Amino acid sequence: MPRHYPSEVRREACERMLAGEAIKDLADELGITIETLYRWRRQSLIDTGQRPGVKSFEADPLAAARRRIQELEAEVEMIKAASAIFEEGEVDPKGSSRLSEG
Image (cartoon, rainbow, N blue to C red; front, side, top):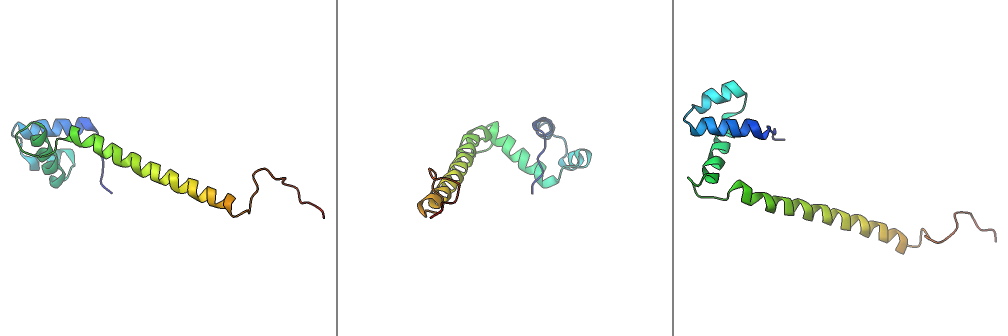
Protein backbone atom coordinates (compact mmCIF):
# COMPACT_ATOMS: atom_id res chain seq x y z
CA MET A 1 0.00 0.00 0.00
CA PRO A 2 1.39 3.41 -0.90
CA ARG A 3 2.49 5.66 1.92
CA HIS A 4 0.70 8.98 2.25
CA TYR A 5 2.65 12.10 3.17
CA PRO A 6 1.20 15.31 4.59
CA SER A 7 0.36 17.88 1.92
CA GLU A 8 2.77 20.34 3.53
CA VAL A 9 5.70 17.91 3.01
CA ARG A 10 4.69 17.42 -0.61
CA ARG A 11 4.33 21.16 -1.23
CA GLU A 12 7.70 21.96 0.33
CA ALA A 13 9.45 19.17 -1.60
CA CYS A 14 7.91 20.35 -4.89
CA GLU A 15 8.97 23.94 -4.27
CA ARG A 16 12.52 22.85 -3.54
CA MET A 17 12.66 20.58 -6.64
CA LEU A 18 11.32 23.33 -8.90
CA ALA A 19 13.89 25.71 -7.40
CA GLY A 20 16.60 23.35 -8.64
CA GLU A 21 17.48 21.28 -5.60
CA ALA A 22 18.75 17.78 -6.43
CA ILE A 23 16.13 15.07 -6.08
CA LYS A 24 18.62 12.59 -4.63
CA ASP A 25 19.52 15.04 -1.85
CA LEU A 26 15.84 15.59 -1.06
CA ALA A 27 15.17 11.85 -1.05
CA ASP A 28 17.97 11.29 1.45
CA GLU A 29 16.93 14.20 3.65
CA LEU A 30 13.17 13.56 3.69
CA GLY A 31 13.22 9.75 3.54
CA ILE A 32 10.99 9.72 0.46
CA THR A 33 11.74 7.48 -2.52
CA ILE A 34 13.20 9.05 -5.64
CA GLU A 35 10.32 7.66 -7.72
CA THR A 36 7.77 9.42 -5.50
CA LEU A 37 9.64 12.71 -5.77
CA TYR A 38 9.81 12.42 -9.57
CA ARG A 39 6.05 11.74 -9.67
CA TRP A 40 5.40 14.76 -7.43
CA ARG A 41 7.63 16.97 -9.59
CA ARG A 42 5.89 15.83 -12.80
CA GLN A 43 2.45 16.63 -11.30
CA SER A 44 3.72 19.97 -10.01
CA LEU A 45 4.93 20.88 -13.51
CA ILE A 46 1.49 19.96 -14.88
CA ASP A 47 -0.26 22.02 -12.19
CA THR A 48 1.89 25.08 -12.96
CA GLY A 49 1.21 24.74 -16.70
CA GLN A 50 4.80 23.90 -17.62
CA ARG A 51 3.84 20.43 -18.85
CA PRO A 52 0.65 19.11 -20.50
CA GLY A 53 -1.66 16.84 -18.52
CA VAL A 54 -4.59 16.72 -16.10
CA LYS A 55 -4.13 19.12 -13.22
CA SER A 56 -4.49 17.62 -9.76
CA PHE A 57 -7.31 19.97 -8.79
CA GLU A 58 -9.22 18.86 -11.90
CA ALA A 59 -8.80 15.17 -11.12
CA ASP A 60 -10.04 15.40 -7.52
CA PRO A 61 -13.77 15.80 -8.30
CA LEU A 62 -13.63 12.81 -10.60
CA ALA A 63 -11.93 10.66 -7.96
CA ALA A 64 -14.47 11.80 -5.37
CA ALA A 65 -17.33 10.94 -7.73
CA ARG A 66 -15.90 7.48 -8.34
CA ARG A 67 -15.57 6.84 -4.59
CA ARG A 68 -19.17 7.97 -4.06
CA ILE A 69 -20.38 5.65 -6.82
CA GLN A 70 -18.62 2.71 -5.16
CA GLU A 71 -20.23 3.59 -1.82
CA LEU A 72 -23.67 3.80 -3.38
CA GLU A 73 -23.21 0.50 -5.23
CA ALA A 74 -22.23 -1.18 -1.95
CA GLU A 75 -25.35 0.23 -0.29
CA VAL A 76 -27.54 -1.06 -3.11
CA GLU A 77 -26.06 -4.55 -2.70
CA MET A 78 -26.79 -4.49 1.04
CA ILE A 79 -30.37 -3.39 0.39
CA LYS A 80 -30.82 -6.17 -2.18
CA ALA A 81 -29.52 -8.75 0.29
CA ALA A 82 -31.82 -7.50 3.05
CA SER A 83 -34.74 -7.41 0.65
CA ALA A 84 -34.06 -11.00 -0.42
CA ILE A 85 -34.36 -12.16 3.20
CA PHE A 86 -37.86 -10.72 3.50
CA GLU A 87 -38.95 -12.05 0.10
CA GLU A 88 -38.02 -15.61 1.05
CA GLY A 89 -40.52 -15.54 3.88
CA GLU A 90 -38.00 -16.53 6.50
CA VAL A 91 -38.75 -13.41 8.49
CA ASP A 92 -42.12 -11.75 8.76
CA PRO A 93 -41.50 -8.11 9.71
CA LYS A 94 -45.00 -7.79 11.19
CA GLY A 95 -45.16 -11.22 12.76
CA SER A 96 -44.74 -12.21 16.35
CA SER A 97 -41.47 -13.43 17.70
CA ARG A 98 -43.30 -16.08 19.78
CA LEU A 99 -43.93 -19.55 18.49
CA SER A 100 -47.55 -20.20 17.75
CA GLU A 101 -49.22 -23.24 19.25
CA GLY A 102 -51.46 -25.14 17.04
